[in-house]
Image (cartoon, rainbow, N blue to C red):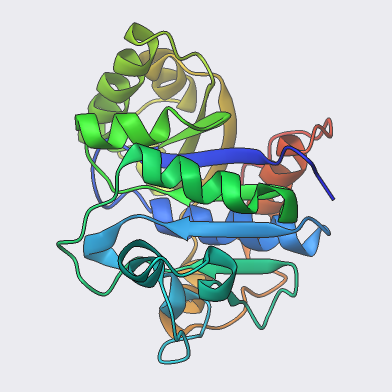
Length: 247
């Protein structure tokens, strides 16, 4: 078991990029590869991980209990039935509750010896609050889609991290489809990489199977194109030299 787990923050410049779906996919594949993994959901206004993992109505405690009642985090996490190595700490039911960067750090420190990876699913948007939390991570995954507005927001977010001296960033491009390229919204994925200015970690296809699985709380099918991409990303996070999966 890892003494110093890799703390990964998954963030984006705006909502709608699929940040939570990526937290779901990476967390699931890391766990399936044998890594003890925890996902902490900080997107308070869009609590959804319990639905994605088919646990809607079966989560007794959440981050709100940890923050308000000082409940030990290990008593508040919920194990995901479809992946025995995966646990989640859902966002509070109260969308107006707040959490500080120090509280996130303290929570992670209190459980780090029990996990190989801790994934922080942050709130979307460019704000000092998000930056303060994200900067605690060992690795920041900036998520964008091929949409020009998302690309601009991801660029602004990355530039701010660089301004703050944080170079521990990698890029994930989500919801990529042949139609996006054919529409000339972008001409090539290299355009996005060059614009945002972050090394690419992975590309996730626009996959209806992923939308259906997360919407219905079902296990992602083994033939889902997105599953292969998540699996490759997770292996790269553990240091394996695997090629990018782009379909």
